[in-house]
Image 1 (cartoon, helix red, strand yellow):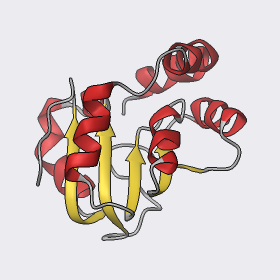
Image 2: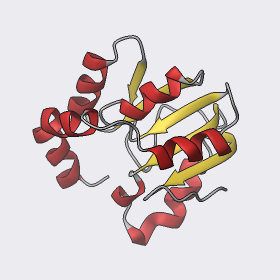
Image 3: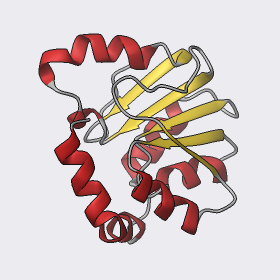
Image 4: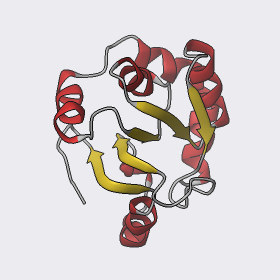
Length: 145
C-alpha cells in the first residue's frame, strides 16, 4: 500500500469504519466465504479495515485474525470488536504473518491497494500466508489459487 493511501485511511478512519459498519457483510461475500472456505478453519482477513467481515467470520465459527496496515483502522476495529484479534500487517509484504499459518485467506476490497506493476510478486507474497485456499474477493467474484 502506498503512503498516500495509508495516510487517507489514517485521516478518515472513523468515518470509513462507520460507513462499513452501517451495512452488513454483503450477502454475495457471505455466500462465497461459506462455499469456498474450509469450515471451522483459520482465516486471515487481510485488509480487515473496520473489522466487519472479521466479526462475521468469527460469528460463523471461523478462527479469524484481522490484519490491516492502518493503525487508525485497527483502533476502530478493536473498539467495536474488542473480543477479536486484530494485528498490523501492511500489503504487500505482510511482515509478521508466518507462511502457511492460515487455512483460508480473505482479501475483500483489498487488492486495489497493490500496484499493477508489482502485482505478480505481491500475489506470491500473499499466497504464502495460507495453506490451502486463497480467495481474493473484489466485487464478490472469487479467484482461487
